[in-house]
Image (cartoon, rainbow, N blue to C red):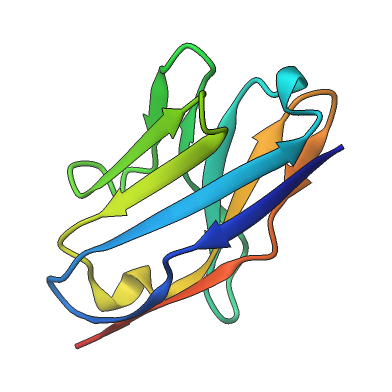
Length: 114
């Protein structure tokens, strides 16, 4: 099992930036892909970005060019740099790690004011 702890959420004005971090512990040697989903009130959870163990990345169309996912394997940490934030980016952001199953973090709130 993998334990994930997110940090870095908060309140920011539109156009601002935030950096989310997610530190993994446990059976970390088994982790392949890592990523971020988000869930806004009344909406389904959706993929934001993902990164493989080799560094290949995938982004939702809505965040391409604004968000950057990265990974520090030595620190067992995945990051999400979020720039040019919009009110529609407001959501709870969840980190996940894929191995024999998917483990999720507890989520961190991101609120973007207009």
